[in-house]
Length: 154
Image (spheres, rainbow, N blue to C red):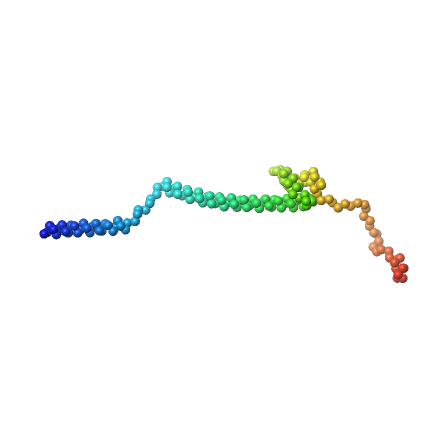
């Protein structure tokens, strides 16, 4: 009897230990994944590459917008120089094209414009034609004596 009791006690203890261990394995969460230094470096490099690509695309768009504005400003300055030089309205685009073709590091637009206008003077508005001599009237008031006598006025 005592042996049976001892066996029962041992069996109960084993069962208790098994049930105590069982809940631990059932509630155990999967082990957290560990990364090697090479894997961490690879993840960081991929993320940096994505961020750099986004920034590069954004910067490229901003640069293209700035270039477009600079081009528009240069065109407006060129038109202004043409108007100041007296270029005819219908010849404006032709003169700008000819002058821009001559622009380089040493020659600015205005110098090129002067050269084009010297070569093609017909592209400039004609100055008003003045012929003859201007007659100046030395008398301040016209002579109305004949009219006054005709109407009987003094």
